[in-house]
Image (cartoon, rainbow, N blue to C red):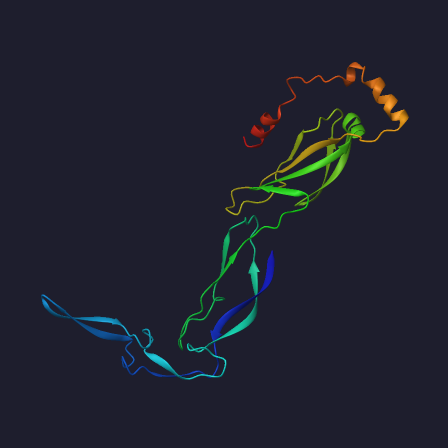
Length: 235
């Protein structure tokens, strides 16, 4: 996706005039003489007056700083790659501050990515987790639901007798890897919503069902524990 952001950066001011540095005569270097036990040594060092540029500002417009730069606001387009994660740093070439000097280069704009938490989706690497709440009747009888994934709407089937805590995996419906090694999955966590308020007729129905063998908890070997489900998710 492409995002446009406003940035404030230092750029070369128009109307800046330069003159040859009188200290180094335009070479950008000064000769330093040091006395040692072996005699006098001569070393070339960066000019202290022009910082190696070989020239200095002779005149500049109002508003420019000592280096001939002014601050301007600019709208910059940034291409955000698919699968980008929190903390990733993107570089936009030539959109940083200008370096001082007549023929200087512009630096780069460094963009640090921060993720805003989603209201209903939770990211885990390239996988996306989603809590789907269904009512008691749907869990018992089975149903179908339409779920909004990051890749569009998907219709899923919920089997009769689905238990709360069951995880449905939609392969390839997660986020792509920024390193391009694959796409994650969309994991739907089923939560059976237990009624909190019952009328007299409903209460009598459930009281009757409480003694029915079909309503007695009967986990079998096919019902995996929470830790087994988590292990399967990462295997």
